[in-house]
Length: 122
Image 1: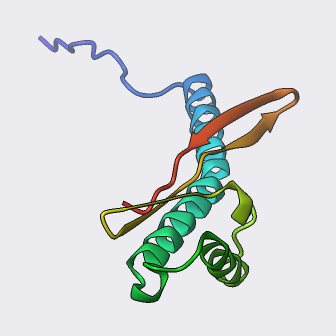
Image 2: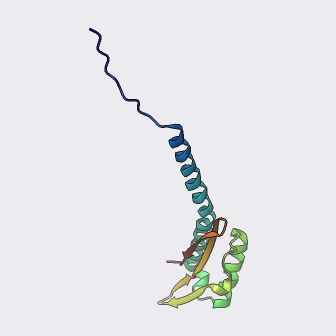
Image 3: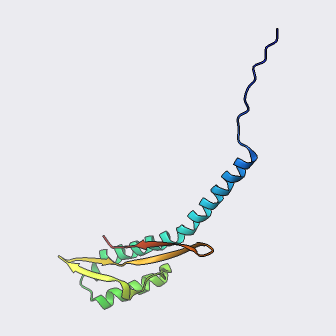
């Protein structure tokens, strides 16, 4: 006697595959739109740390510090903040630079995402 057990098919349907692919592409495109904003923030953090750790800048005036930032920002192509938006604090011989700015990232149609950044030198 030949008895064949019926085995249920398992796998991904074509509709499930299309839906999964759509969600993966949407998530990837959204993620890739965030990258430039985070790169700019990393550049600003690096520039602030470099200026704050520079021995010549420890006793520099706020005007000189802002000019140093402008020069470094033009080299690093930092365009989201200007030197006038930098908060400069000097206490106990330690220079601290900080700023606060927002980046608006358009997703599609009239939907955008607002990112808030607070880079600082420490």
